[in-house]
Amino acid sequence: MPTYLSGIKEFIASWDDPFVEEKEGEIIRESAEGHINTDGTTACFNSPIFTRYHRKFKRSLEAGIRELATILILKFNCITYSSCQGHFSTADAVMRQRYVGVIPRNDNEYQKIKKLFLNLAEQTNAQIPGSCVRLWVDEDQVDSEECSLACLHLFFVGVDADEKRYFTDVEIVYKKLLENLSTYPQG
Image (cartoon, rainbow, N blue to C red):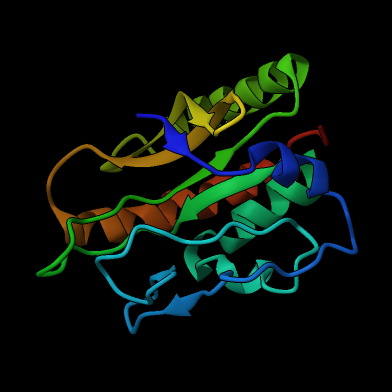
């Protein structure tokens, strides 16, 4: 299902601008459970997105996905626009699985990132065959008032409904993925 992101062209154009200015309404709050979003609640799915040099960028990344997002940005020059560390279900929200979303700048970059994600998913999944968490690459699009752009997501998908097992295994898969990324040639 496509995501709507207002001002996507401006976001991409300012991604590498070290002098990006703060905009009104760019509020982030954190819940006790680690949800970082506009409301700081378990039920909120909205959050402002920040470019890599924005002073709130690092604080907007949840701890369980921060290292992956940082590696994708610094080592592979990716534009990340969405992520989640994954969260247990609550009375007002369903369980959320871990993922990171990337908007490629052009078709060539799209193909490189897709290949990177597919190779990492295949390698990591093969190294941990008994895990209930599998890496999955999703091809999607981001819609805006001015255009639609292709995007890619790397999901940590649970293959059964056991949340406790998912959150135990997701850490194992995440660490293995980071290890694999450390030896992967720079993009």
